[in-house]
Image 1 (cartoon, helix red, strand yellow):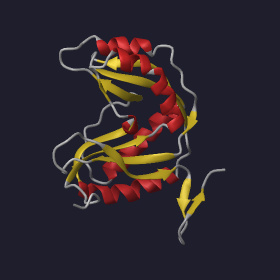
Image 2 (cartoon, helix red, strand yellow):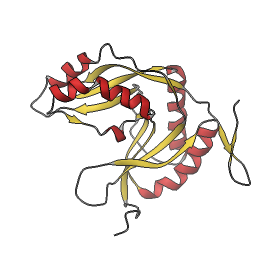
Image 3 (cartoon, helix red, strand yellow):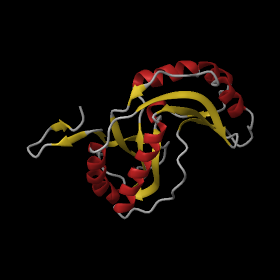
Length: 205
């Protein structure tokens, strides 16, 4: 079986990814929650992303036009400085950590990305951006663990980092049974234009 065969459909989203150092810092802060709330469905650290536009399940044919359009848009935008801070929850079911830093520019970037997606003729459900990084989900009969875990992150403040790349991420949907995993389809550096002869040329100092 060829592991590189494209699935017919996949869940697709556009996102930013914290660097390994920031993820390791948060993982250390989460150690009491990992031990104290084992029934939570914890996201894999590899899947930690700050989602800018969630496109849902799409045919894999949407990927090529998105690649070209997002590459151009990333090249035209500067990097941001962001950090992870605190914790919270949605409806007592979903645990997240918040985002700190260049939030105004983050909202502008998300709006820009969504414009790009629409320009490619891709339909998706738009929701207001609430910058966060999803950490875990509770089971149906557990309405306590997520709020308690969120309270444990109240004092957490991670170090700032510089966003290096814009990521187009896809799932392994269409490849049969098993858990859904995500991987980068492609990622592009911010503020970098592609030279006609190949290679990258920075467009910002």
